[in-house]
Length: 557
Image 1 (cartoon, rainbow, N blue to C red):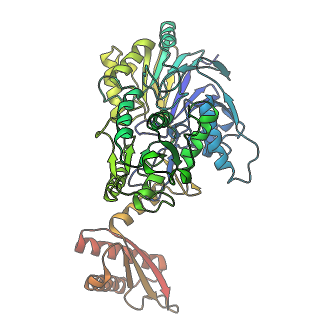
Image 2 (spheres, rainbow, N blue to C red; image 1 turned 120 degrees about the vertical axis):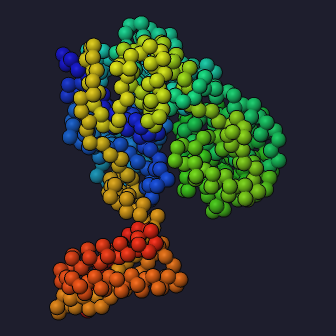
Image 3 (cartoon, rainbow, N blue to C red; image 1 turned 90 degrees about the vertical axis):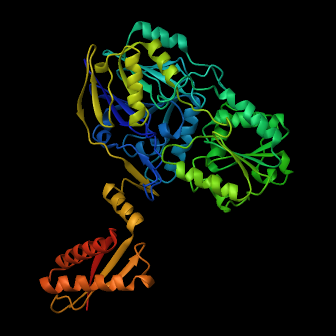
């Protein structure tokens, strides 16, 4: 028997997205979720951010399985970079049927790019209420509600004690599809004794209760009744409850529904196969067919509610979508709230849609979206039902985690029994104690194109400088025979100053560099480069109070 259990978050703490938690019991590791995070506004050229798998690379043989709470990208999106890259491709993945379908689709896309991997992922479909064993871990899927069907919480039991991981949750008594939350089972587990609760913190600043998905029905009904032309609803591809609500509204108002965006098409296809969408016969049509119908009979569900430039809605706003041209009479509904960091992109898309003559409806103009995360009263109820000895707030920015901790203290949990972890912190639990024992290295890993982890903090700092102040290239002529600098450097600028109007500044800069090189008379190429960059950097800051990136190169003459 091993008398300690280690919890190691690799993502999802102090941030929105990238959720990943390790349970380590002896040498055995159980992974819970492996998600992506969308890049922040200053992460230039980055597609997504994934957890740091460095700790797992050294212990890949100790991983007994992966458990997934639900099918959102911030919980499954990093699996294609984990399987086959870090842990074996056949590592068992335990998830609900819908999550398995979404995972299989994501893995198939990634694995099709890899010629060195053969076989398929080892997906094991588990439903809420079922339990299974993975190494020393007894796992039970708990019924919860979220903004995607088939989401679950987890009860993970070892000989150290019982841990409840809520996953993303809210207490929705009237979900659009599926059953409600399993209050009785949560209460039973609380009565039996819960060592620690890992609980969703995203909504911890919001008072009261998160509204049910059903509150959106009247707003959608009004929009479908009053819209003079086409209706375009933008939402997350995985927000299937919203897709179902659009289907219901379209059916009630004699409209057909078409889909735009690859991920939307794929997710809806998987959901229909698994019975998670109820679509009346003939209501769902191809986009091309819908565009040939009278505009008052058409509704389109699309991706791009977060303003992503490559998504369908942004291309409609730019006028570059191959099939859909936005025009006066169109009604655009953004059924989402911006993920932190995406506010500017979303606002930009809204403004461009309005400029094209569309009527754009979004929160708070109308109740067309509700959160999938518990507000404060629901978090209190989760604490009251489970009665944990220790609390670990998870899934949220630092302010969310702290707000959750304050709420728990109001509920009577001692401050010393609440652990506000950072990504990489190791929380060690015994049957009657908990403490943070160490912190493993943990940094964001950037994915850009086909490159994973090739771009690090140093490159990101350089991109920030380039975006903010531009760069200056200095070509320094050096005698091939003597190694001496022969004349002042030639300067080329991009994104710093407009050369035609700043000739005097660049001329004086070149003269300053030439003087510095003449005085010191360096002959080593590296010394010439460093002296040039240092002199020009200092000069440009003195003259402009800006710090462009200065790159010097030696040209032999």
